[in-house]
Length: 173
Image (cartoon, rainbow, N blue to C red; front, side):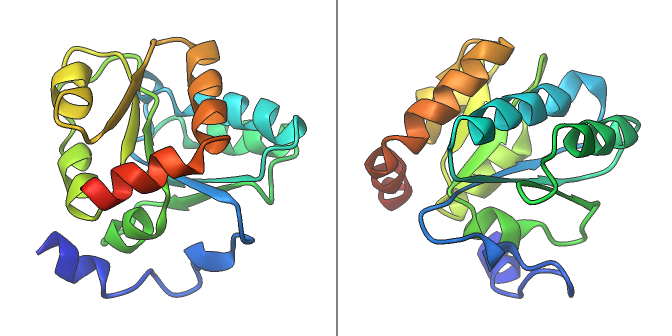
């Protein structure tokens, strides 16, 4: 079912494939609450983009932190690098078209999006939370980084510099 929905296409007016060639496409699908860590992910993306990394960050979801995330993206000059789609009925085309699922949560139980992304061949990078190692690292679905702002930035930078690692994981899923 997830694969079928992924082939239905993105919502009208939202074209994930606008990213230039060689661009790392990263997606987060979450309720935009403080515990999900999206604001810190936006700050990490800002530092990486300023350092010259070709990266696009797509945030799918809605919630109480959305205004703060939008404001931070604007203040950091990320209009071309960060896209907030809002809540989508079908996020699967976005996940499938992305290179990497990012879960920057401060705390997380067992996010279903990990399995959905794996089903679509999109590896995950997640912060170390209660189930991260079991759900992502031990399954081969992706990578786990320390649960800090700096670790998110370093992990994204590391993977962006080694696209062959993402490609290998994508092919294995």
